[in-house]
Structure formats: structure tokens, C-alpha cells
Length: 186
Image (cartoon, rainbow, N blue to C red; front, side, top):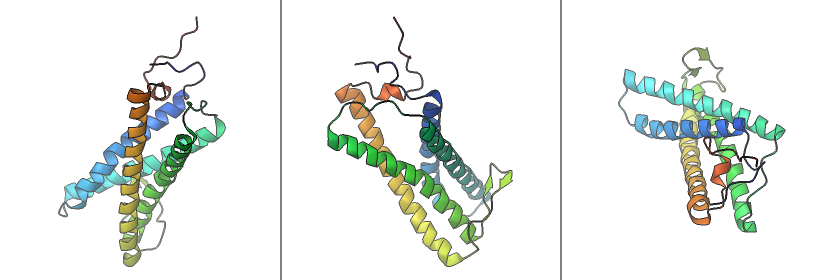
């Protein structure tokens, strides 16, 4: 496998934000599915709080990631067919949109249903809309649909990354792996 050449790795901050968001999504999505059908109990309420904390943290990290990306040029793209480059760009754009839309619809749904969002149990966030049960029910469906869409896009992203790693062997994944050795100068 080819190692990426100097200057082709993402910055440490970009790598940290990427993996932090990935970890949060990998925990938050199954947690959302698991807690949904639990009977009302203190455990369910606690899990909902954790799910909200995860979502708001994803939103905060996505904002930070977008700001970082605006100020720092990513490494040059790995050579690939034009259709794959377009698909990768579209997939990344869709992931960014969903990393904002999923937490925002969850927060708005909580507001509409009359449930306060308190980040990490200490920072109460403002309601985004007035209490409106009908709107909350619509937002519940929107939030679930967007969450499933994000899971699908993340799965495609993972499959594409693994294809680059194990089929193409082009060093693409090494650019974003936190423990990949930086290129050594001779």
C-alpha cells in the first residue's frame, strides 16, 4: 500500500473532529433506536438525556469542523474516476447537512413536545419553537427519517473508505487515521 506523500494528511484538529463525531454518531444512533421503544421509566428519561447530549455535541463539533475546514485547505484528492470524485463530494456535503439537520430537528422536536434540552445536564438550551404537540409529532418523523439517512450515508462513507483501503490500496484512509505514522523525511 502506498503511504500518503507529505502534505496529504489532514490536520490533527480535522482528524480529531472527524473521529469524535464518528464515535458520537456510532453511539447516538443505536442509543436512539434502543431507547425509543422502552417503557416510560427513569432509565428511559436518562437515556433520552444522553441521546440529546450526544446530538448537541455532534452539532457543536460539526460547527467546529466546518469552521476549521473553511480556514484550512484539505489535502489534495486521491486520484479516482470523475464520477467517484463527484459521488465523494456529494456524500461529504450530505453528511455535513445531516450532521446539522439531525441534531437541530431533535432539539426542535424536544422544544415542540415541551421537553427541555439541557446539555450535559448543566447547560439549559433555549427552546427553538413554542410547545406544539402536533409539530412535535411531525418533527419526530422528520428526525427519525434524517437519522436513518445519516446512518445510510455514514455506512456508504465507511464502505468507500474500506474499498480504498483494501481494494484500491491507495493510502486514502491513512490521511485520516489518528495513529498513522507521519511521513518521515529522509
